[in-house]
Image (tube, rainbow, N blue to C red):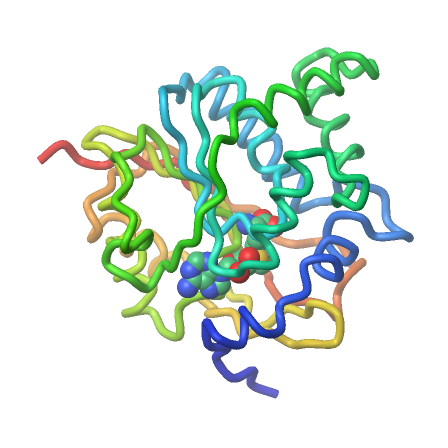
Amino acid sequence: METPFVSAQTYMDEFDPVAYHRMYYHPEETTLPGERLEFALRNYHETFTSDGVKGDLLIDFGCGPSIYQLLSACEAFKNIISSDLVEQNRAEVEKWLRKDPDALDWTQIVKFVCELEGNSDDESCKKKEEKLRRTVTKVLKCDALKKNPFDPVKLPQADCLISVLCLEVACKDVETYKKAVRNLNGLIKPGGHIVIHSVLNCTYYYVGQKRFFCLGVTQEEMEMAFKEAGFEIVKLKIIPRTEKPGEGIFDKDKYYFVHARKRCS
Ligand SMILES: C[S@@+](CC[C@H](N)C(=O)[O-])C[C@H]1O[C@@H](n2cnc3c(N)ncnc32)[C@H](O)[C@@H]1O
């Protein structure tokens, strides 16, 4: 069964951040991090430590209700701006930032990242959360389909932009996906970095009972999109999906991680 494209308005009306977190980041029967998250977290750790990606400003584009993707980056950037299309997702991030008692729980993932960094005692995990809370200074509305995705706000160009599991769900076809990558290019300084992790050949995912569209891009289309948008790929990693749990909640078959740099001219 083909899943129809889901408009921005449907995201705003129907994306349930709590159900999303429960299904993908706090499953009752599975142990975290799981295959995808481990792949992602190890790559972020490497990128923001040994690969030396660092600077003043990092933009997290299409953050959803999530903060886990910033746990390594917050050690390498002075200022992080989180952003998402959907108001209820931004509200969940804000809740976590202000330590609201109802905020989503990321502690298992924080512990895993602290383990990667070599300090996973309770005190270090608490310090990590506090560091991230201090570093995220804004949570803004964004739309990947706009030429300036923050319109009417004009942000200074960032040293790095990270975006996770976002472009494929926002774009109805490969042409739009390529355009969205170009739109992200405009948000980054010449020579700056883009770090993208997502899925290949995935056509849907569930959030609660709601089935959302995903654009099934191939590796060739993805690489072409970055090159045509003015990026040079520094590192590309692709792994097949092998684990069974969650089989019915998405149909991706590969995970990708790209670190690329915006060309200077
Ligand atoms: C699968 S979630 C990923 C969230 C988060 N990055 C993560 O890793 O958990 C997809 C996100 O893309 C956002 N999104 C959908 N369309 C968008 C658009 N046109 N511009 C920006 N974000 C969009 C949704 O609101 C949602 O938060």
